[in-house]
Length: 380
Image: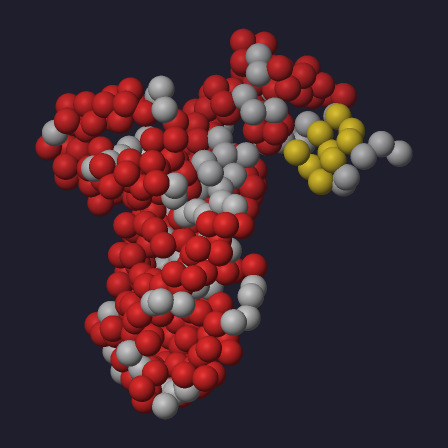
């Protein structure tokens, strides 16, 4: 028995949907309006309508024409269609379908999860769904947004996130713990070359374009649409001959959003009452950041929670991680607490003499230069 079977009555309509031939499909639907919601195909026992077939075969215009028909689709069909369109990253289909479903239903959240799982780089699709979603986002959605690098969307959703739980003061810190694991989302983990660093410092963030409007910038866009179009034109033409400049500019924007979220998550206003659970989470973030050489997060955590460095266990582990990774900047920060008896000089020397793959800096090539860097490290 075949896994896919087409209903003979609707074969012509099915073939028109597969080809995206609206001129052929329109007369059929005029004669038989009920065919819009009919099962034209069955796949592994699951019914499929002409709308779903058109989405599967990625015919945007065909889907838009179907949605505009006076015949009403059932809620179930529309929700399935939206999820399928989102998983394929089809912005035209998503825009055509998203207004047809109830924003308060689970369908938009389901579509957003599918888009983040199967089309995480189709940011315009994700923005379209996020802007129409009612209610706060779930933790899986926020984690997927972080992993995909959409930190501007995370910041947009942050005010709505975490206030449906009893431990609301730790929800954003838990998310920060996931963010810290993404090395390239922070400048200290980006590992740029000398030339890339120079370009990084020269690129103005105001010119970096993401090809669609951030809802926070709508007022600016409405006031000066010509300026917005000029900015997009300038950025695209400036980066067209050198794509690596665009990549560096987008990285700089990601670093900005990452630090903004970290500042938000660790702010006193956001945390409220500091609990042992909060300190435990923050200490884990500090050690994870130190392991990855993320100096920005370590400094930020210790600035907001200075009491962590008076914990002997945390201070000792922090210094070990810093030394193992040969993180000079972080070592100077942590070294100020050595005199408190958290780590003896002999113990420090023992750690320093151990070699790990993390000791090899990515910007040092050759054994001779690596040896020179090691000797310099002992002078820190």
